[in-house]
Length: 462
Image 1 (cartoon, rainbow, N blue to C red):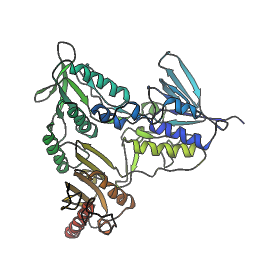
Image 2: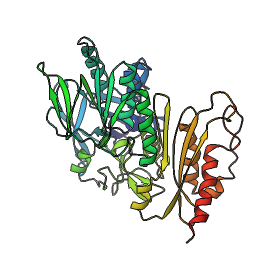
Image 3: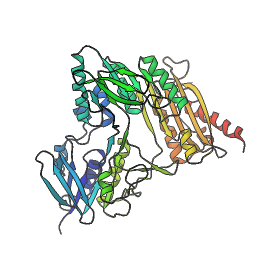
């Protein structure tokens, strides 16, 4: 009996996790695996690129979890620099382009995994493609940026403009600061970190100012101006221009789902592929999709959303590989947990913001507290601000945001578990969390916030 053929489109987290898990469950005599990757690297951490650029990570080898050769040693036919340009769902085949030779060819499949990832948002602005303007989506992007920084070093001035103040933007601002650049962040929003409520984003803004990073809110970029040498020289907004020797785009990403959409697969309201709990493409028994190209269910809001994170992508891959390999797995959804930092400031969030709760018609209360990450008398105790959002009357936890120094970010994991379990803030106050003065006050900041939120729920009345 001939082996089935699995074709995987995309050689990073979701795609190669799926291929590897399927191979663990089925040998080559049962399952042939062919994977296509249009780039030059596989199974790498894009999240680590800012830390490579800053010099904290030597990279890029340090960011690669598994090389193409290691995948091939596991009987996965991995074809690098080969881009899938068409999916023929009815015919059970994909068309591939060998980017080195220019040759195209068709490959049949019995089962298909789509893991095409996300593409960085790159607005159509004058000068956006000028030398010295960089995105940071791939390892190749990271190397190109480092090469550009070396070129800047030879010119004398060291001015970096970061466009966007989300996770990528603040992390790249830190990287540029560590490399000795004068850093300006141009942010279209009300405050940095739009994944937080504005009052919490303001804390990030103040901290960035304190680090010497100039953050300009409400700044809509209108174009990139070049100098006599053709390289970037200034970034123009509606109000003024900002001198720049290098520009880093940190505007975010969107699902890379056009290939699947053209093949007739279902795409959701945020542009990502729709899947069932087993990560199957909706309406297709033998096609799966995972990673940054899909939409996921928000367990708190009850709606789908697009979240590009390696944590989700690897879980998707494990679920897909289990199902392809004859096992069973599901991915129930997410609560929207994310952490980041800018220098020593830690930033965390999970669940809904205030505007998210309003968007789905939820009435809510909020409470914000200030505490410390250790007992106040213990050396090194640093301030921490926790904001909690709970449903009106029921007290069901809806979201938590934390901004502070050492020990702040990972406290959000307690809230993530509580959200997943559907806990109320009153139930949270009884959580048996670890305590010792070097790690926490007697009342952990998350529990202090829960107690204050309970009072807000009780005081809100009907």
